[in-house]
Length: 96
Image (cartoon, rainbow, N blue to C red; front, side, top):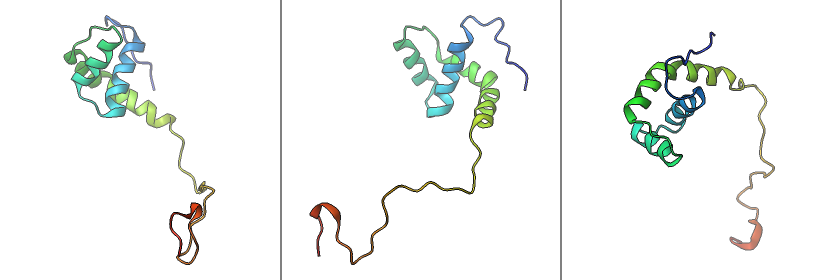
């Protein structure tokens, strides 16, 4: 995978990546991302966020999927064990 070129963009790559990440990760609208960035003092329009998502989104999403750990055959279970119908609940909330 080649490097993403952020040349000729007004904002630094970190801002662009963060805006695209917000949109892709949390399924926000473009205006929601605009408002979140405005709370941080950045004046970015929702149209700019849309252009960034269309241009950089597929590459950033591919990189995020590539870095995700691969599924394995090993499962990690929680310490609690399932209880049978005849066993009492802990804490005395439900006793037979």
